[in-house]
Length: 501
Image (cartoon, rainbow, N blue to C red; front, side, top):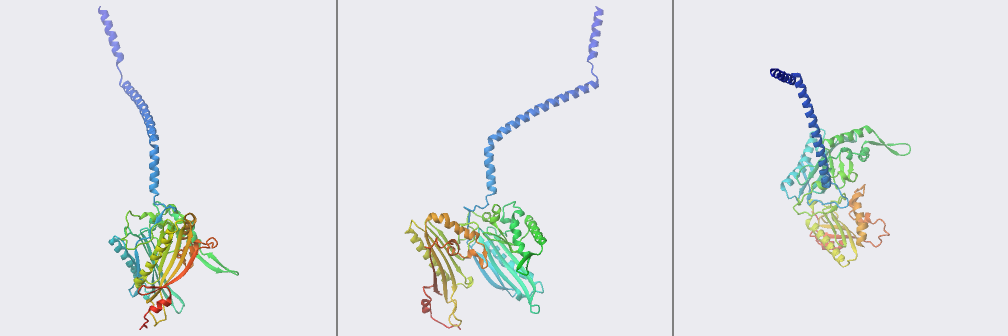
């Protein structure tokens, strides 16, 4: 019995001894456990990620049409300012822009002032700049002891007045002529640029003309390169004829490099703009919107839901983009169901000296003509009537000492009338009108668009096709009370002749 007991104790002791684990073994087993746990965790995590990606992909595919719509809408919003040549139009601003003359530093200064903005604060701010900036340049030039006051000439230019923007510049020229050398001893030319956003009164920089992110290389391309080449040429005579030679291509490259850097860093560039493009004044080089339509922003950037003008000065509306109209003081474009009326009045008399009674009398005459055209159109519903009139009002001058020039006036009146069909007008004639205002190049006497008598000069080029066009030339005579006479004889007979002092 005792032996069995001892035997059992030995077995138990032996068994206990076998279960004893060393520290080394314990560490190894724990490391193995950790490795196994990490492997299992990695497998589970991988499974979950794969399952999640699969679900996400399914969700993405379910929402893909909606995302495509969002992407298209974002792209549309990004490009909403781009030009649509078929549908986009602009309005000429309802402003009265008056040229003033006065003495500054004993120099005759010409400067513009505007009227017609609803926001009086913006109007005052712009008018201050239009006057002060040119005076500041004059002061700067006079600091040069070589420049005399009588050698400074200030010439103003109204470049454009459309789509809630305004572009004006002054050319300030100073020169001293040397009788001994028979040439100009000293020469200075400064440009005072006044480009305004009329909604805020802020100045417009060149980058503002374009969409956000437009790169300079898209603007200053080969077309501009060709534009500035004449600035770096000389004319020379060989045995047979004159020829032009570029003096230094390196100079051209340096100027373009400078302009690209200025544009990219939004630095100041002397430019003015209009409905068709930009002019860099320091180079007399033009950039035309038609060359980079996808980047032009000026037509839409400053649009507002409500008019910013007080309504006192009506101007033309809904003019197709890139079509530049002559900036006459009074114009009518009226298109109805079966008529198209295009009339302009150019008053070459100085605004501040203008006889308003005479001017308004001519406007009333134009409006009566418009009423007659519309009445005629209403009686011919199957015809399409076109009326294109161009008028010019000037003082009628006589010999000095006989009659003052502002006692009588003469209005030159070009009239063109044409009957066609609505389908012909819409399919051919109207498009030709737009092409005239968009693409007629500059001519020696100025922009060809100044010929607002479109059909005479541009639209009806083939006289055989339009042999039934009715054209006439009239002269209206007015006295200073605005009374209109058909002949000069009738006018003169009505005047009480007084010899000037």
